[in-house]
Image (tube, rainbow, N blue to C red):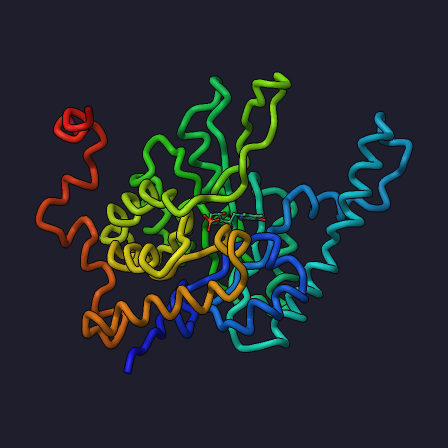
Length: 327
Ligand SMILES: Cc1cc2nc3c(=O)[nH]c(=O)nc-3n(C[C@H](O)[C@H](O)[C@H](O)COP(=O)(O)O)c2cc1C
């Protein structure tokens, strides 16, 4: 008998397959369908900092706005995504089952939106995932300034949050291992989600226009994240959730072997159908049976950087032998 129970960020969960924040987790109808397949936990669609601020600026004098279009935009945004709806979504999702519901906020500052954290908590969310993705595109902003933003936000939230806070990271920090081990030491972050898949621009050469690149990952998009999970899992005392390109049980097992506590999936739900949640759980289970493992702890981290005979394979990015052998 295989037991897939585990913990993540202090939450007890039935299995390590977590549904990542995405369109499916933004409405109660699809949440119901997801829950029928019993994932370990579910991260709600993100609420954006701008949405929270827009909501709290309701009642502002219309004449204060130099640009009526921007007010219309804010009002529209607010109508579509208002805070009460989000709180209601948390309450409704909590009523459906005992599966942990993780709220998600996409933020870039530690401004007044943080006061909303208490409402999320009171609505019953089991944890809060912060998606802080900062692109280092401004030549005048130093890496120290960017990194201090993470600390400002996390420390400010820790003043209010009694539920676990997790942090969804971008992989574009200039000194990722240093940043994460420092954040980990302060213990205000109970889980690190590696990595956020960014909105990316692409170029349509026929119409010579900037367009949006595909939002969906493919099943081969996991390798860089796997490297970082293996490097960091032995260095952090708090948990890692792996996300990016996890489309089947085999890839999920790779991340558990590299030391992830859980995997988060979203693109595969769009490319298949929601029953893939069950398929991935079954594939993990049947691999465990084939290897004689009864619990996930028996093999988790077995192939992390600090456990393998040649840890340097995870750090090597210029591998002469590898490139030389490709003709
Ligand atoms: C349609 C769609 C919507 C998403 N919306 C969010 C979001 O609101 N907040 C967030 O943190 N991540 C969002 N993501 C990113 C996913 O949570 C996930 O981290 C990323 O897609 C990588 O996992 P995957 O390869 O399984 O898709 C979204 C992804 C997709 C495909």
